[in-house]
Length: 518
Image 1 (tube, rainbow, N blue to C red):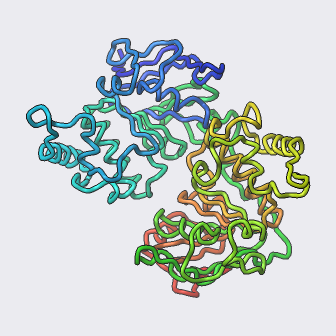
Image 2: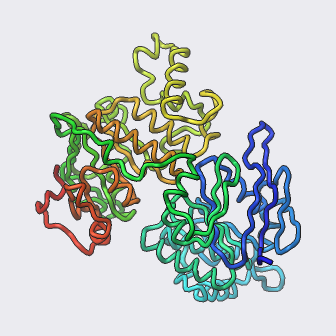
Image 3: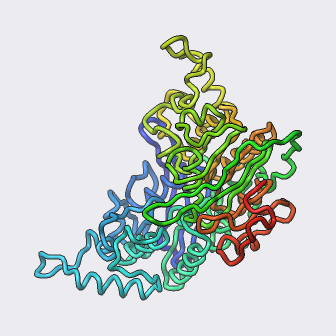
C-alpha cells in the first residue's frame, strides 16, 4: 500500500453565485515527495490549496490526513494538524524581527504570561541553522532580502512542526541564485520526510524539482504524472488544451523605414544617497523589441519609473519620436505616444473595485468619439470594451463586473488590451507575464510581437531571461544601475553568456559592442 500522507477524494467546490471552482478532484500526496500542481489561472489550484489549508471548505468530497478523515474549519486547525502554507505574497510585519515573526502566535512563555524572547531567539536560530538557511533571526524583516523573507515564512511552518508544506509560486520573487538555493533546501526537506506541494507556472522548474505533477484545467484534475514521464510540451498542451508556441521567431516581420522612437540619454538617479542609475543611455527603434535583462534590484524598475514619470530623477533626458518628454506629467507623456504595462497589475495597472469597462478606457476616455461635451457615450464605451474583451480573450461574465473578481491572467489581459488599444508609439512592458499561466502568457507575447510588427517600439523588462531571449530583437543587460552589455544578434543570444553579465562577472567596455545604443 502506498504511503500517502494526504488524500483528496471527489472534492467539489461551488460558490454561492454558482461558480464551480473544483470538480471531482482526486489526488493523493505521498510522504516525502515534491508534488507540483500546475494549471492556468482560474484552473482551481488556489481554491484547492485553500481547502487543504482550511481557509475554505469543500462543498462535497472527503480529505484524509495521515489516514484519518479531516475537515479544517480554519487555517489554525490545519497548522495544528501539521500543514503549513507559504503564500505568494508574504505575511510578515516589517518592524518585527525574524524570530518574532517565526514564533508569532506560538510564543515560548516565562511564568506562563510573558514572551521568553531569549528562548525564542535560541530556538529559531537553531531551526535556521538546522536547515542551513543562514538567517540572522535578530534582524528586522525590513532589513531582509526577498529570498530571506521567504525563508522566514518557511521557518514559520517548520517551527510549528509542519509535515506538509504548500508553496504558492515560491520562485516568482527570487533571483536565479535564490531559486537554486531554495531547490536545494526543498530536496533536503524531502529527505527529512516532508511533503512539498509546489504551485508554479514555470514548467521547466516544475519538471526539474518534482517527483510527480498533477495537471488541472477548468477546475478538474487532468491526471497525475511522474515528472520523468512527461515532457514540457505535453505538460503545456494538457494545461492549455492545445499546442503552445515555444518560439516566436516565425511571427516577426521586417518593419521598413525604422526610426528611433524612444531615446534615453544619461539618465541618473540617487536614492537615500545611493546611486541607483548611473548615466543610462539607450534607444529603441520603431518595429523593435528591446529587452532589458538583469537580476531584480539592479535598477530596472527605477529606470522604467523614471521614463514613465512615476518618480523624479536627478538628470538625463527622455525623448519619444523626437519630442522631449522629460519634464511632462504622466498624462502628457501618454498623449505623446507612451504606453505602459506595469509590473504590479493590481497596485499600478488597475483599480480593483472598478469595473472592467472603467479600467479598459481609463487612459483614453477623453477621446472625442467616447464623449459628448461633459458626458460619456456609455453605449459606445460598452461596445468598445466588449470588443476588447473578445479580441483579448478575457474570461468574464460581463464588462460591468469588478476587475478584481477576475483571475490574474485575465486582469493582465485587460491591462494589455488597454495599452495596446491606445495605439502607442512606444510601449513599455514591465514583467508583462509575471505570475500568469502559460496560455495567457503566450497570448500576451503574441500581442507584443503584433504591436512591434505594426511599427511600435517596445521596451521589454523581465526577470525571466528566457522571455527576454524569445521576444527581443536586441538585449541590454543591467547591473548595479548601469548598462553592462548590449547584444545585437538574436541568433546569437546565449542564456549562459547573458547570465555572466547579469551577475557582473563580465562587462562590455563603454562604446564596445554598441553598449546602450541602437
